[in-house]
Length: 190
Image (tube, rainbow, N blue to C red; front, side):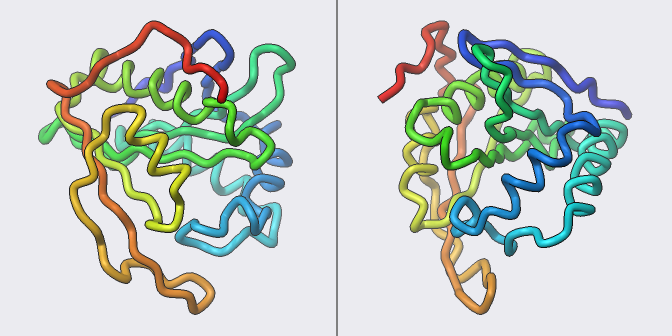
């Protein structure tokens, strides 16, 4: 089953399918140890990883298991990061939300704005009933994004990740269709 990869627009952002020209920006993002300090995998050291990531994005759409979108700022076309819905299960009407942004994009409401647009598409177009997300318990900013979107913290996965020898816990968040409050207002920058 093919899952149509959308292009979504907000006041400040464009969420679009990845293309091959994104490899350099994607490698820069995922090779940044500071950006990935709470990630469940170490930073990339080889640019070919970016090419494989883009191929995996296309494969998710072809298999109907998810969509991962590049996020660009409308004002200057700058690549800010990405936002995704993966582990899409049409029988359960569920999926998982994920995102990763360059540290220069942090603190401006971009992650919340992009995720809100993707969630709107997920609940309205895919007719999902539940979206789940996980974040490292030390990543307070990511937890705040999820809470602003209406996600409820449902529990803690104890010692679920070991990256570079460091053990960490993750919080599990869930958002149900009946709790979803789409907003037509842009997310203000703080």
